[in-house]
Image (tube, rainbow, N blue to C red; front, top):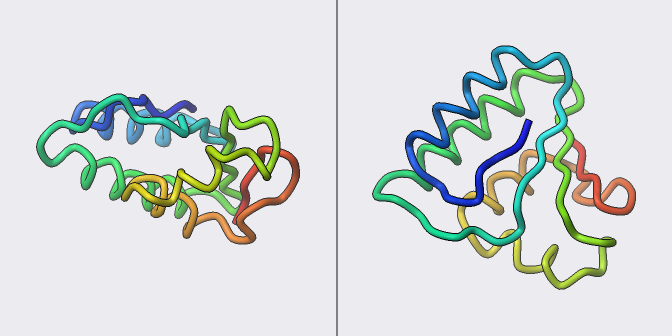
Length: 100
């Protein structure tokens, strides 16, 4: 599954459909969003909660090269990144995989 870089209500709906069909909890998330539509960021954050609840091992995958990449530090500065980060504990499992 992959979360679109543009956070919109339609992106949240697409994510929810993918969660319903998915057999594994891996979610690729962009560390840089290109824009947010009205209400979209909140809808995507809510869809992330649904994603994390569906799998025993919800794993967040980023395009960052390693855990010290500055993109990882910037990710939780946005609502979607913060939500995804909090749902995946411990925050960094290995290289660029985050798991709860």
